[in-house]
Amino acid sequence: MHRPGDHLNISRGILAAVVVLVLLPSTMLVTLGIRLMDQDRALEERQRRELADGAIDRTAVLLQKELAAIQQRFVSAAWVPPSGTVLLRNGQGHLLYQPSPTALPEAPTEPFVEADRAEFQSGDAARALALCTRLASSTSAPVRAGALLRIGRIHRKALRLDAALAAWNSLAEISAAAIAGEPAGLVARRARCRLFADANRPTELRQEAAQLLTDLYDARWPLDHNTFLLVVQQASQWAGVAPDVPSEMSRQAAAALALWPQRRTVEGALCDGPYTLIWQLDDALLAGPRYRAEHWEAPHSVHLTCAGEPVPQGVSHQAAAAGLPWSVTIAPDTAPLREFSARRAALLSALPALLVLICAVAYFAWRAIRRELGIARLQSDFVAAVSHEFRTPLTSLRQFNEMMLDEPSLAPEARLSYLKAQGRATDRLSRLVETLLDFGRMEAGRRSYQLEPLDAGALVRDISAEFSAEPLAQGFTVDCRTPCHALPVDADREALGRAVWNLLHNAVKYSGASRDILVAAERAPSGVTIRVVDHGLGIPLDEQPRLFQRFVRGESIRKLGIPGTGIGLAMVRHITEAHGGSVDLESKEGEGSTFRLMLPGRG
Ligand code: ADP
Image 1: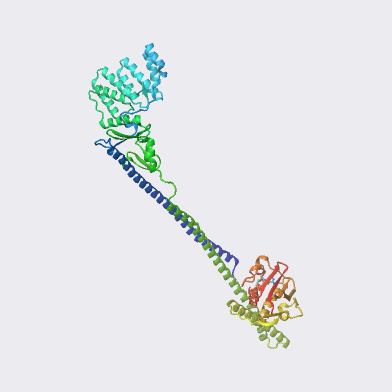
Image 2: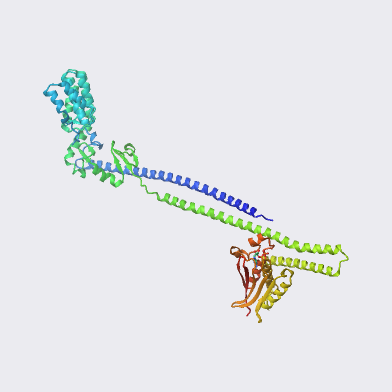
């Protein structure tokens, strides 16, 4: 027979298998999902980049066209210059001289009052030098510039020429300071030239002056036009060369200078920041930041950056790659691309749906397997119970038979009682076989019912009397209550009788200490009710709903070791329903049970 532990182990095994079957595909699915999402994001990023690159290329072409159109305008207008190219310059620093150079911070006089007094009034050059040397290590560039200028001057006066040159050389490195309105670097270079000239050191003078000219032509310092011309002339003299200003650059600077006073009227531009000069010989367009922003940047949603300006965040093409005088930067749209976001949304909703599906399938599979196992268990219990039921009458048959064979001279009364006992065992066997065959037919749907008009009260009385005469009912009081009038029903006498018999048999089997059974038939609003009431063991509430299913037996009954096959109540329900009726049960554990068959009345 089947042990409860086995069932538990099998259930756990199935559960483990189902969990593995769920976990494995779920993990794979989730990993796959994450990978797909990553790939999708990378693809989106690439596409975004490609879109931005495409946008920049298109913008660059448009800007090139616009610049060409401006050039064309110069060419086709009445004031067209005969030939030449349109040149684009960016940033003030690149012009030889500025229409309005930015003023550099001036070296202050205040920190040097004491040093100047020592140098000029007290004639204490050593003290002046000491004071200036201290100030030369200041963190402020203008103060440093003022100090280095004075150190050079004091050394020069004391004829320490190399020391003076060294001080001015350091001064030449300072770019963010001015001395008396002139860039400190320029002041230093000129001072060095003067010293070489005064000291009659022509070679070094020429070298220094050549360096000064190079710096001037490189537009190293923001100078106004006059200063530029003056210094170029002076430096050329020192260098012993004719002034040789690069003509193109000179023209650009001249154009910027000429346009500067009209800067608010030229193409509506404002030119007080780094500006773009579109220049062609005598004609020029001076475009400031606002013009750039309004005419070139805004319509194309790009940012144009001159060399040296910080490039903003986004996808950028360098000036050379864009074919423009600026680097072009575009801030790609950060909103997710629709195609990708739709795909990801689909993936995100499909994944959980798939996971739910896997779990649901696994759950139903687990339930189905469990149910099948449960049925298998019930069937094996049934086979064991049926074998047991057969064994008892068969054993008694064999025993009586052997007793009669062993004692041929048996008294006739004893022989008669043996034969009667054999008869009872045979009856029991045949009833058992009949029951099983009947149950088999019901299960197969082959049990046919011969309905005939009959009196349910009379039937109950007959079955009750027959049952009371049975040995198994010995010691029990079966109280049969039926009305004196007939209770007409259409019923299969044999089948309905079997249903009532099964209920009476159960009432005896599960009677516990009680010996009173009631069977009653009575009229009911919808027909006829047959009741079988006992005061026996009763049935726990949680077991009641399943007891009418085939092979199902109560757990408490099973534990008590009361034999049974679990098909009695299933047959009762089958028979009642075949008569168009129903069966119900009321029971309380330890107090007894009432089974009620409700049958439709006749006519
Ligand atoms: P069996 O009696 O052979 O086990 P049944 O189908 O007749 O099978 O009954 C199914 C189960 O219902 C029983 O095993 C028992 O647990 C419970 N049962 C039926 N009738 C009674 C009753 N009168 N009192 C208590 N329990 C009952």
